[in-house]
Length: 133
Image 1 (cartoon, one colour):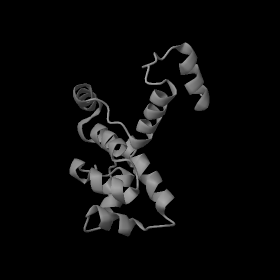
Image 2 (spheres, helix red, strand yellow):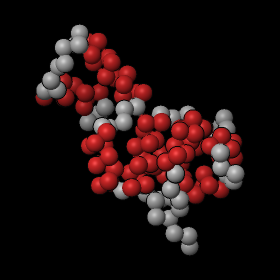
Image 3 (cartoon, one colour):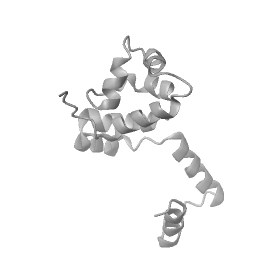
């Protein structure tokens, strides 16, 4: 039995999901080629949790998976250095913001006329309702 130390990590689960979503349009071999892996087995090892995604491969993997590089970097950092170290990096450099999150932030700024509104109970409840929480 092959040891899969990262099988239940968010990165492996996310990559597996993206590969399934892209399956009608591109093969895993095409994805591996776009990332620069000489063998498609490397993508299999990452998605199955046998291997980590090297941080220097995050930009090319994000392009190949057609996903946000900041989000993929955040997941990769957690896997590469562990939760505690990833939290320290985020504390020092800030949370990577995805393109989608930036869109939300820009809409909040526009809707509030750039008044820097406080997140009180009422707006928090409204947001949570949008996401079914």
